[in-house]
Length: 506
Ligand SMILES: Nc1nc2c(ncn2[C@@H]2O[C@H](COP(=O)(O)OP(=O)(O)OP(=O)(O)O)[C@@H](O)[C@H]2O)c(=O)[nH]1
Image (tube, rainbow, N blue to C red; front, side, top):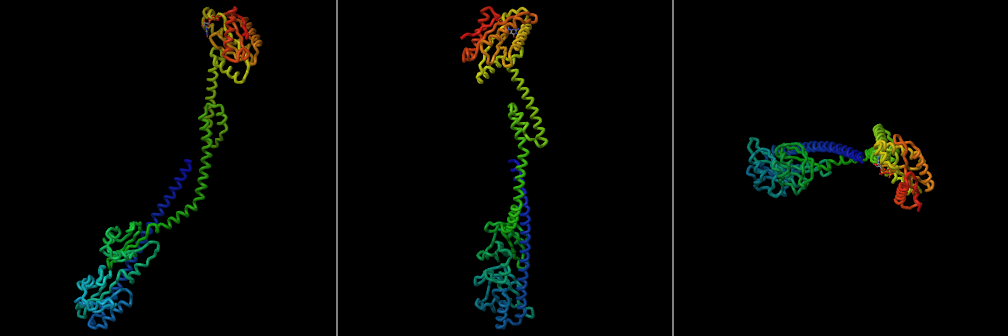
């Protein structure tokens, strides 16, 4: 699982890194493109305004000596307006601000004295003018472009002007309105007062945009590119440049989402193309992780059960196919071997009487329980050394111990393979005789008594023992009672003179 998670993190990180780098490059390229486009439009706008002023300049020269000829004036304003569609209206104004001729005539301002922003600026400057946009007498938002008319003597006589209505179709409109993307990209134009001269949303024309980072930069005379939020809160990639002629800022912008469409497509393709390899990779990781971890897991499981009998066999069966797991397996086998030996020794010690090497009381109880479980009938011989206190008192405790050991050897020799001789007290012994009837047990006890009686004990010489016999389940189905009967028979033997065998009789 951990390996899959690691793999996933690696794959996702790689995709994320690729996505980030590609995104950065796309945004950078798009910013550059938008700036180039805004700059191109700014230059085209300059060309357009230059051409508009040249047309007016040409007419001004023609009109210089003809201002009193009404028919020439009317023909000239029509020609200028209709020859190209640069202007929405054309007018000739004298020094007293009176309109001498107008095209189209429908404006009905011929003969009127005008005091509009464009007229007053033109008269005041007596030079070529491109006005800031303003609302005309008849209510049009317009830009006023004029050229002065001077007589051959150099006297100022007025001017010829063309107007471009910002909210109506014109060559300027078409120039700005045709741009390359149809994906939410658009351009807009502001004058140096942050007033919108061109915007795809006609309703916003003429309005002043106060809070826009790009417009703020453009009115400070800066050109460049930037990522901005538009008035609808959409992230836009903007390039901006300045038309030097009119001091207009031209901003070309494209929605970030549109610019990133190729990236999403590219990433989808990358995912589709790499997916099979990634899946194969994950399968391989899973497979190899399982291959590596399986022996480790099996060894770890075994390490938890070191004390169980099956463990050694289980460890042996682990397929350790690489060096580290082989070493681990060897170490575990060594450990298990040592542990089992120790456990075995401890178990043996637990059930063994240290002085004689015979079974102890615990061994007796366990064996009786086992016989009971397996429903094995048995007899018992309870044995006690006669007058042992005297031996101890006479020869000392160490000699007494030696007597006990000797007697244990005699018992062990008399016992058959399946008999279980135990030392259950100081000089008290008990032999369990499985599948042995009471009479046979009595014969064995008698043989034992004789063997002991005839044996020569080091330093002490001859000793005797007393013995009691009882049987399970013949005497009682209760094992404790059978043991008690054996004891009673032993005391009976003592009572009846010692060195004899007494058999429990139901
Ligand atoms: N050397 C030695 N003596 C032991 C050991 N365990 C018990 N004894 C002694 O064995 C003696 C048992 O004495 P008693 O129970 O009075 O009986 P007895 O002298 O054998 O006499 P009877 O059993 O009546 O024939 C005591 O002196 C104990 O101290 C032992 O492990 N080693």
